[in-house]
Length: 62
Image 1: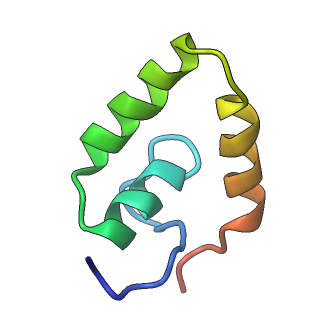
Image 2: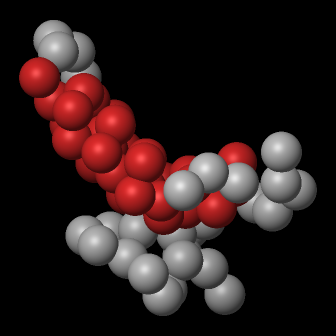
Image 3: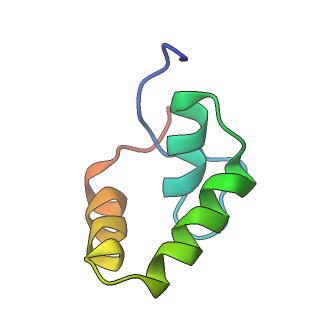
């Protein structure tokens, strides 16, 4: 696991950088995180609201 903080990168964003920030924090491939995020929309739950919350709460990278 990486020791970087959870933040939205300024480079490599698709929409808001939430998936890229999560991928960078845990050392995962950003494409994999994006595919899982999109696929999770098809199962019931508050995924969209969680994405919006991360967008608001995650700081931008310096």
